[in-house]
Length: 345
Image 1 (tube, one colour):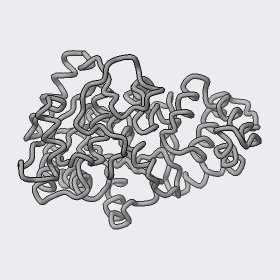
Image 2 (spheres, one colour):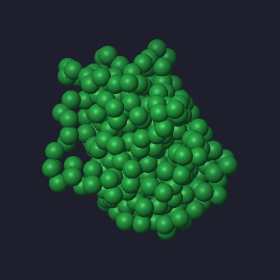
Image 3 (cartoon, one colour):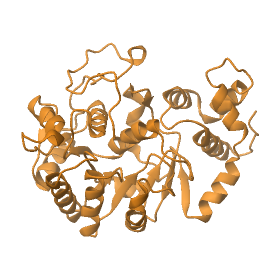
Image 4 (tube, helix red, strand yellow):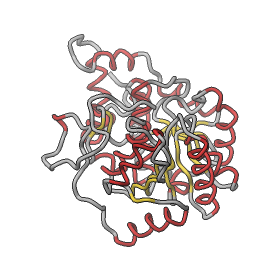
């Protein structure tokens, strides 16, 4: 069982550190329980489950038995990494919206905590944040559009959020850096492990001028579920999301679905009708699920218009990817990317 602590806040933080080290990012079973019961009770429950082989939490409990929260925090601090939790001044308030929007591919919920690297403040940088995402297999057109759009957004005081992947993501980060603006990279693995490895230098630049964020603890490698969970954080941190390029099964469309479920502006940069890389985003625009944008000013107008209206957009959730048992009773909006298989990123 977990060790008792005198200070409740310390107990909550240490419990969340321990859970973060043992669960898959975005495990809705755990994030949902933490939201309902609190981290300390869930930690006790899962540690006890480590003694019951037939329990769904048996594997997590086994991992928890090997975790040392205090040591993890100390090791992270040595290399400039901190762990923030709900209730901290630096915790972005927008992430709380993830509690009520279901799941995609069994990932969901507000993170139990975030590992953060960089001198910036996540709340401050996230105040005017816009996600710019797209295909890894981006064309020259997509790279150019992502770079220029992100450069213009950063020049107007907006923080660009993306996932550090090849293609559109890296172009988005570079565009913001060109403008001397901040950018946030959300990783599927530890914030000290660049993924892909070829982006190690880019990651250092982002950590110096912006922030690197992950649900996974330092040292953790990326996993398939980590990529899917990462997408909800990208959407959750941002006022709205722009998809620059995305094929029908692009991982960027997963981020687009999270944005729709969060009732935030979803925007798309139209691509050539002959380009397979733009079929997904072009379809989002055609079906009215994303507004068409071609400049940073278009993006700013969409985001500020939604904020000025003070509404949450559509009141129905797009639950095309949500497993049946966790769907709401609302009718789902039709989607071009519906299907049983997970998007590739």
